[in-house]
Length: 386
Image (cartoon, rainbow, N blue to C red; front, side, top):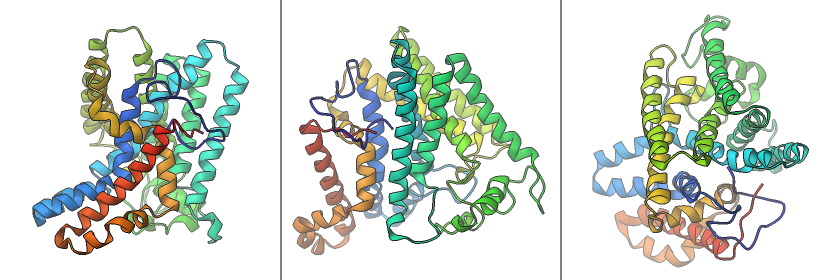
């Protein structure tokens, strides 16, 4: 789940190309919107449409919109690290650029802490803290994003590109070493089963009340957004940071694309090799998972960059840009309000009489309401930011 979202002060008088300042890279907003699209009923439209083709097709597509049971990688496993990659893409513009022009480091640190605090608060609201369902859950998607952003932002503030590379490698190798070398009572070291891995053990030790939050098998043994996985999650931001530096450089677009596509393919290959000894497990956010997802993120962003910023094909991406300009806004609001109720005002009768197309129309109409709400914000030049 980056740059644009809920802010204390509403920013007006901007367009998709200048909302965050001169020289905004539209492909970043488009990729952010593409990622969020799947979370705001895009998954439902695709799975319901696939089910209409046939049961086997529907089952195969639906399996890609669920997390891997344990070892493995699905499209749904890609959504969260892609979001963090886009968070990183924005940092050279939101942090490094400001440091280079001499902005106050104190003000930047305050901004980073403020943003982290707001994301944590929004995450806890999404965790239903107002319901006073004790014990209150402190982890979750937005808290994980907040802490990953905080760690990555501090690295960017304190180091140059060389240091950022070293920190990224250190986070990944450090997590691998911890998982491989620190023994879990009753299981030993280097165990990657649901029951015996170090990350789950620490969750059971430090967050015992949290090991109940979802219906997946591994939820009995650890928190999907738990303690130790925060560090490799922060490493998921850093490839985006490095690609953001590349974007800001004077390197020709052809060479940038070579890095995005060639480097991404190399990362995927490296992750598959690494996965032989350090498995790709989404629930553990293993280092091999970070590298694998980063490779695909680089290649996908290379495609967006080539189409939008190099070739100048903007129109196809406009629906994604509208979502991407207020990505966290809609992610938060859809958890608090039932947009489907607004869709039912118009579509209830049609859906009731649509037979086997009912699910598809339900998802599509809800997605349309959410997108039209975001489009209204876009037309009003309202972009909420942390």
